Length: 488
Image (cartoon, rainbow, N blue to C red; front, top):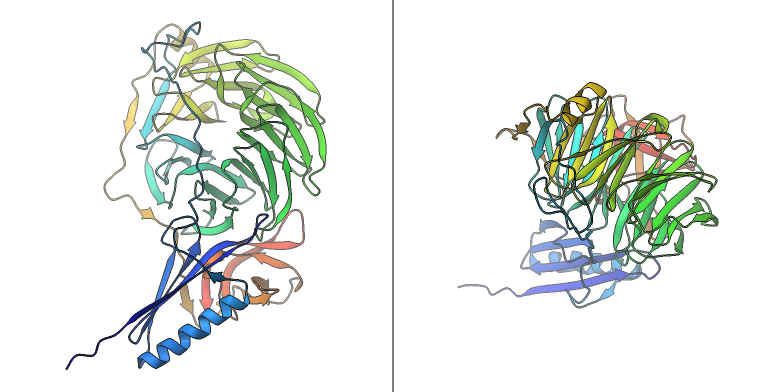
């Protein structure tokens, strides 16, 4: 005799206007099995947990309890799939590769840059990060590859959506993705650090002392704190905000109307400069640099004063500087890269040989670029190498291939369980005004401060052991650094 079971599914959504939560929660009971699926309303699968009970009655009772908890928090029945996935905008590119036909009235570089090595990531790449130890590229496929400076692939991280950018904030490293998630890359596995409201069509983002600045397609800019809550949101003086740079005092926003600076606490406009449409931005301690579609990189003081312009031959897709602006680099949409001295004198212009540079970074006499064809290329920017390149003598490019055994890491919503803190710092998860927060319970920390903690592993009443907790530079909250374990 067979027993027929009826599958029951309840689907709820919480969608707050003005930059709040946009989440779904689905409970399915099939016989004695209950499956909970939850996540952001972006058209993705989300996380899934399945529990088996002694019988169907107990499964249905637990499902009713879970649904009731969510309804009391503001969730409501909804039609799955009715809310569209967030929009993703890409820079439209007409890139002339070395040897290709340049745009009318634009003369592309004919001499090739001294590229030492290049790594083909597989799709167009915006994300780049370089430090003393590693070179990283993040592409539209969501893959981040880390290489040593001598071009050895050491790790690959696969994120759920395309990588917009990779940014450092003190000891922390973050990757912003097209799906609105910002992942902390500082531990062994990526952890979800920020969720950006789905109504923001992200163009760029930056982080300073835990405060996230985001610019969007419509020219708005928003500052978001460590708990995903808006500090402020402002409509800028233009559209298409490809530049946002954060520092201790301000958020600098570049858009179609130029560069506007806002107080990071209040969003009050501090100054505005009409530079021409901005396609990329860079900053040093006292200056910001705006790469524009009007073929210049404009240098501005952080009090809004305009200092000088660095003239290129085509729209500027990216720019970077050596320390304190000693050299200024630019990449145009014709696959050329430039170098200027601080005064504005052009020192050289050479072809990349691998597409237009979407992003770039200078480090220790080398210029690293990520390009429209997905390459991470290392250019020898020493004077000797550049002079030789201008004479037509360049080294043979080493094309780097990822070894078959390279470690691939994906974001995780689980943690290992330990029975003892082992000398680590203990934090606990608690509910406050309908939101799950985290605080430090180990002695020696301010109990009133909250902890920036991965979203997907929070569970009310749970305690966790972390390797290290550091005070944010702005004060008022802590950030976790290193490994995380759940304490039982």
